Length: 247
Ligand code: ZN
Image 1: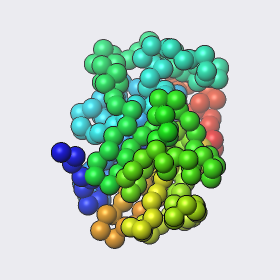
Image 2: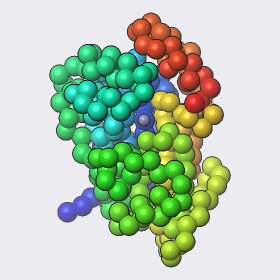
Image 3: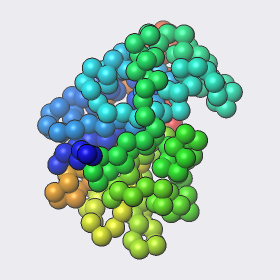
């Protein structure tokens, strides 16, 4: 039997080992009494706190899917496809993951579906090949790869809503979107730990299933603390800098 999503839940992605950002996110969702949290992967990679972030997701029992950085951090297989800075960070992460956290990451599924919602890191088409959904034609093709009302993705670190009406797609804008039952949606929830839409604040979404309201939340968190930890760890300083500008 497939369990359903709760009436009000939050979806977040791409923590990237940013502990100050993850803590701020949890404070925010705990204060709103969300009944469910779903994590779209890339728990590790780039930031200085991979073990702490894995432990929080594990201990809170948050359902999570595999991200490309999580996978590469396990074996370093595929690290050659990363740019130099990401490669340095993933090697650093690989050398530090504890056996328990390695086992946790190894067991993450590539997709999850609960009732009306599918969850995947990059794209419902070939979830193991880490495709980006960056334009309308890519989005249209992806609607054929899931059959739920909603599909949540991360990976690009850029929030986006794509609405399918018949065979036409639109991209509703704004912090709140009223979701309609006669349409379907592909929703990029943005990133908690390394936003890339020129806004350094963490981004996540909440969904109220009764009203159909999807809301993007932005949270200011101690960016300097995350940056200092990156520098103190000997990770590339560019990774600290990009957090301050949201790129
Ligand atoms: Zn990512």
